[in-house]
Image 1 (cartoon, helix red, strand yellow):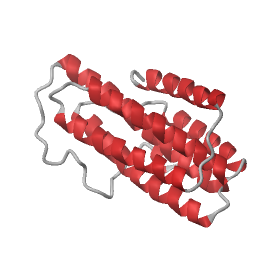
Image 2 (tube, rainbow, N blue to C red; image 1 turned 180 degrees about the vertical axis):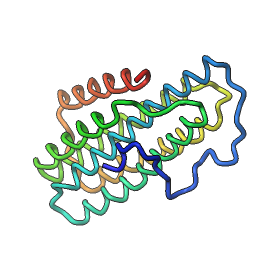
Image 3 (spheres, one colour; image 1 turned 60 degrees about the vertical axis):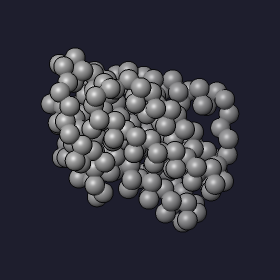
Image 4 (spheres, one colour; image 1 turned 120 degrees about the vertical axis):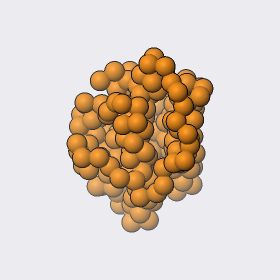
Length: 195
């Protein structure tokens, strides 16, 4: 629940944007970058809920450990996004508790179905998140190297989390479930950009 709290999150690893010079951004570019970083922050809030929901019902201690390690990296992502939002003169989504609770519930429900399905849910989530982050790299202002450094590091780690879930025995989710996940993410990201 730490992820959804109002207190700032402190990353345990160095921010990949440390030492990257701040670019001069127009007001529109700064606002757009902040909107995208707020969406990324919201995704990290949801990741905390998802991983913690899965961990609450996981059966295999090895998979629980894998989920905790991924959640720890996601917590760093959360801290990096918060730092960048502050630098851009903005803040996180005001609906972060809602995003956390919904993701926790989805994680727990998929986990109740068994570890293979839980891992499948994580693999698909991380695949969609990596695609989403690639899209943000294309949409961020070209000279915003600080935001780009954070998003690129996050994308690489999300891809690894998905690969780890696949290697641990993830089941492939049915197409309708994948589609529903994509639709849910679209609602969340569309809202979080503004609120």
